[in-house]
Length: 64
Image 1 (spheres, rainbow, N blue to C red):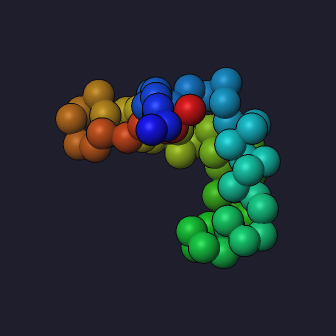
Image 2 (cartoon, rainbow, N blue to C red):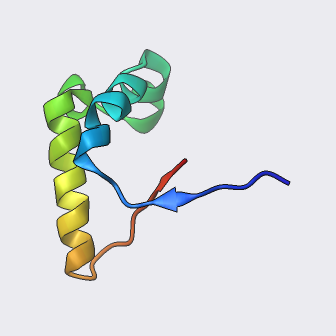
Image 3 (tube, rainbow, N blue to C red):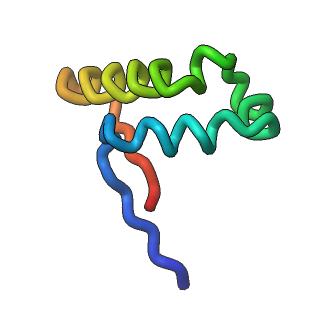
């Protein structure tokens, strides 16, 4: 059985996440715009998710 590790989102991963989410098929499947998948858009999303988590509004993790 495979092991999955869940980690908090980190801004230093934004460039790699942006690269992966910018793939046309991923972008289309998730309904993301070019603005959303830019490095800046990805950083903004990570900051938003982390802030929401601090306020106990969401619980979001990335797999590694």
